[in-house]
Image (cartoon, rainbow, N blue to C red):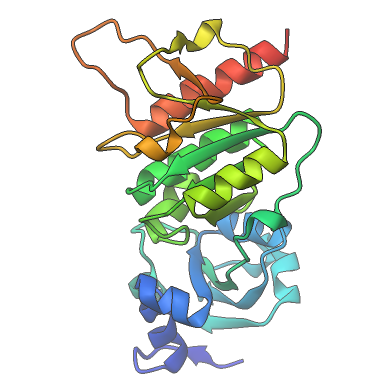
Length: 258
């Protein structure tokens, strides 16, 4: 197979185009760089269109990757196509997966994280990393602002975007789904709330977190939902959404391990 060295190559231009959200949506594709991330995507059922090696990559380190269609770029060209400054000389174009709620497979007493209109891809990636570590059954984004396949989301998730089941839908659709699945809902409104350590998460549980800037909208203020809070001891009145998700998620795990 010939070595690709030119920025005029159509495949190079295609990868560059996937830096834009509108192109990812239009083509139904996204770019992943780094051996760990590529291997995690493959291990979790994401379908590659093409795997791309830098000429510096030792293919003996990833022989199973050669089961897929692959192309070799010069090391200089590969560096130019990458979003990160330091990667492991391998990347791939993958096909996006459906994000519908009905694709989620929940076990007994599932634990779900729900994010309303999350704005920052880095926070989304960090939450997915936490969800993977805590064994969360699914992450659902209501009315998303940022793109799941944004390079910052992929990078900050350290590949866990591929290991954590996730879906996206409107708030109304998610609320109807929660009711159908008989999942108790805990919101993060301060009013009439209990400290999270005094809240019982033993049954099927959904934790709902609001936007970084404004918190939850009034659509989540329903009488049959319970409010829980993380008490603040200092002068600030809130945590970064990814930190709050980690605190709450590991409390759920702590309670369920007792």
